[in-house]
Image (cartoon, rainbow, N blue to C red):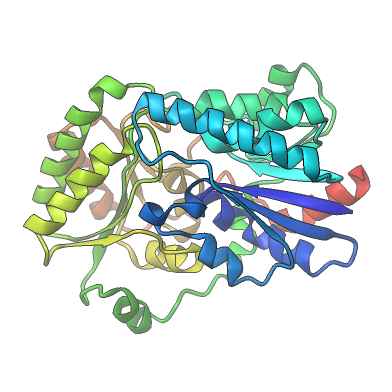
Length: 367
């Protein structure tokens, strides 16, 4: 069975990894990676190099991002991605193509495949993020797909309502949590030395723009800046940098300015990679920001999360999430609350055991 895998960012590639390792080592499959989006961007860490380290026989590379991140540039990047993939789908055929999540580049690649009858399998459909335009892209991807692999039963039901059918929809749990119960972090001393983290506890921070409220992002970034300054007086801060989203540069510029102002209290990481990022979560006091990893994965590391703003609004949450507005005082008080709560002992609603094996079984039967 010839499988194509669309990956447009460090985030989706990290989620795919348990599945990719199994497919690569199963003689039933012939796998080709299709890398594009921020993987090919030097300003976002050129994460293609991480894919190449995993020794796939075939990696296709498609560059289609425009460097700016205003609305016109994002729309132009979308159009350019469609054009590039029109050529790609014309010349490459697969039995099934995996697509994951809700990125605009992912949506563009999938939409280009519709006239060619590309058979897409969508992972993480049915979710809701009302504060991000990705919500629309995710549903576009689901509508163009013939196989749906969702995180929870709630999301499976949403896909049923969206596509008007109950066929080929399977609840597999979050793929990124596959085998999480056996995860062993990098040795603390080695990990801290590897990234230059001082030998003290830290708050792990990731902020992205709210792409449904583009006129508010300057104010939100300022609220974030003031809150992080105050938090840094008591806690060391490790920040993973924003992805390529509309107005992501607003947050990036504020974060880089903070680093200059507080060089001994803030560490910036462009791209951890999955194992390092999981280790970073394991050793962090709490998570702060508006990234999906706080919703999907942090509960499995027994971490409380301060989820800021509306980017993840509507996404089902475990009981480790504390929600607050983009307001300096509310962010600070929520961080203190999360730190005081210490260790989360509840469940992660996104976890199901053997997610990757279950997906393998599904696609073999589907073929």
